[in-house]
Image 1 (spheres, rainbow, N blue to C red):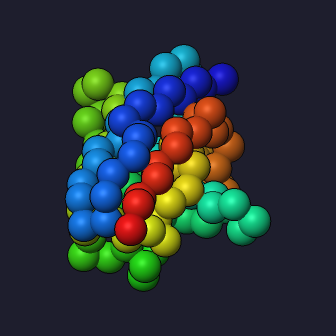
Image 2: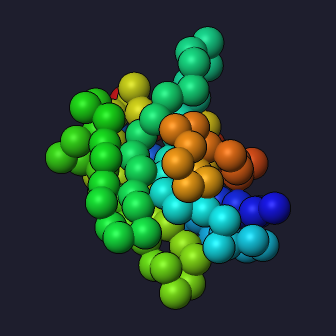
Image 3: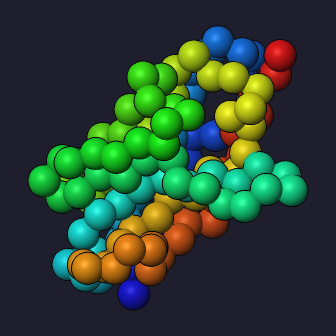
Length: 118
């Protein structure tokens, strides 16, 4: 089992920045990619960004150029730097971890609220 613990959410004005962090513990050897998803009220959970152990990244079109995902394999952490935030970025953000060769996450954090005011 893998446990994921997020931190760093909060309230920010449009145009501002926030940094989310996620620490993984447990059977770390069983995960490959890590990433962030988000779910806004009344909407489905959607992928924000992922990063492999080698550092290969993938972003949703809506956040490209504004968000940056990074990973520290030695510390088993993944971070999401969010810049130029917009009200439509308001959502609960979830840290996720993928088992090798799986297209969907096998592990989820509890979520952290990000609210962007206009």
